Amino acid sequence: MMRAEQPMIPKYQWTCKACGASNDRAITSCSSCNMPAIASSEEVDIARAGGGSAAVYLHRQEWAVGKARWHALPIWKKMLVILAIGLCFLGLLWLKLAVTVVDHMYGGIALLAGVGMLCVTKKIHSAN
Picture 1: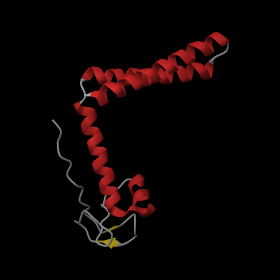
Picture 2: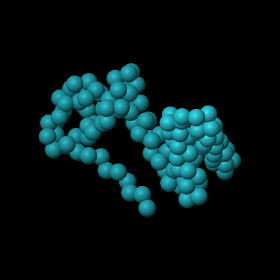
Picture 3: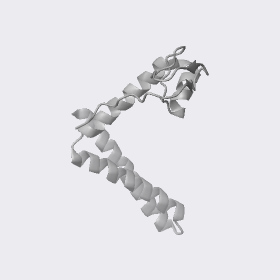
Picture 4: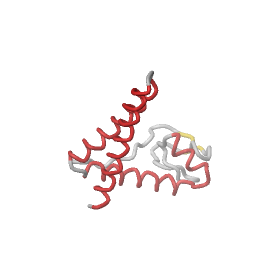
């Protein structure tokens, strides 16, 4: 069961990270630019890049949708994705540490197998 996230309310006077405006305690967004009181550095960068607070809220909504889609996947699809990412990592590591041509071949095979599994997983997911 997923619980709804409650906005964190600052119990002190705070300064907006996006516009620098001073805000009173117990409000959840900036009074001048509507930026959330609690924001990550990535969200501040999004707001400063010209998107403003609307882009930040859109980013949060997209993140929540992606998280919900991941939680809705059956366990076998999640395991397939994790295995594919592991194979890609193993292939890259093998290629990095390879000494002989055969080692390069095995690393390449592992990397290609991982990428192939990711492609198959994506195709299975988009078909449903």
